[in-house]
Length: 81
Image (cartoon, rainbow, N blue to C red; front, side, top):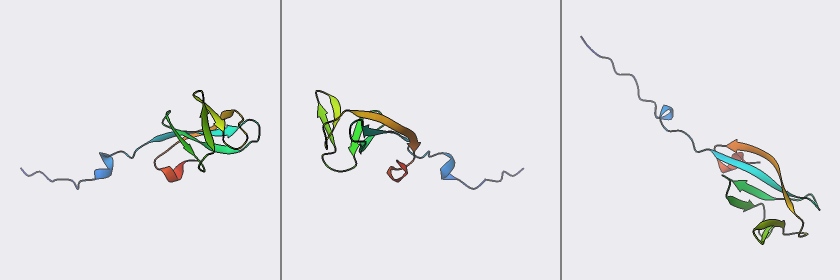
């Protein structure tokens, strides 16, 4: 009796990282300010676009409130947005 080994496919074992993201848009000026990644990391689209005022995100352009917009899941940072 012989056993035949199947070829090893690493993609079946290693899952790609999943990044859940949410857009942050300004209520006043409509500017896309940044993204929240994995419910805690704020990534501005440009330096100074997101400010924290008393723990609340504010628009760096007009100081307006930032609201959540589109959301999704990506496997890389290039897939966000």
